[in-house]
Length: 281
Ligand code: ADP
Ligand code: MG
Image (tube, rainbow, N blue to C red; front, side):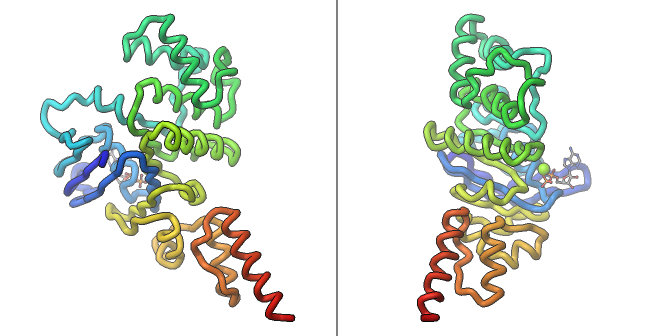
């Protein structure tokens, strides 16, 4: 277990965003949080690295109460890195300098050592050839991967992404998601990711649906997305694959709703039509 969240409450003045929220986030998982706007997703994940201070309840990180008085917030923020919708890069610095700056300033490492490390970090996000470029010369997806490299410089155990793909085109989105999935798979970094793009949840270990400050659904992607009507009733969509299967079922096809990836969906449809073709003969 990485995070244990107990009876968490966050109020902004008279507005209660959530109260009595309980969650567990396991080490090495990819957890995707979806839900209608204003439901408290951002507030919740900002509490995880204490960008927001909860108004009641506890958050344990590896068993340690991070809401306790005197807790070292800065050290914790290095362990739990945040990536935002905006790229948060210095446009007047090169890609390499954008990363070395956090190593020299935050990690207090020498210029030379930082440079060497920064190049390795760029390699981990597949952008070592962009070291001397300026952010303005990069695509959105590349900028966001530089931001991720900057977060990796802190050697985080967990990366939290708040709609980090919202400003990107489809190619940029898939670049960022596959980078994140690779970091999770190869390095065991825990990922908590908020998105409005349902297909970004297809490889997640868990999908949490947050609505009006409550966890409305929580489970494996195929468990959650198979509940098409429930998701629609709270104003959400499902991945296009599931939507297609849902429509075909409505038209009388015998199809499961649990084929989420394009490959699974195509297989399910081929099997269905293959079978009915045989039956026709
Ligand atoms: P989501 O990310 O799911 O869209 P948020 O966590 O951003 O939801 O917001 C939840 C609620 O908290 C909203 O009603 C929002 O207006 C309110 N809220 C968020 N941040 C603040 C803040 N700093 N001050 C006051 N209200 C806030
Ligand atoms: Mg938000």
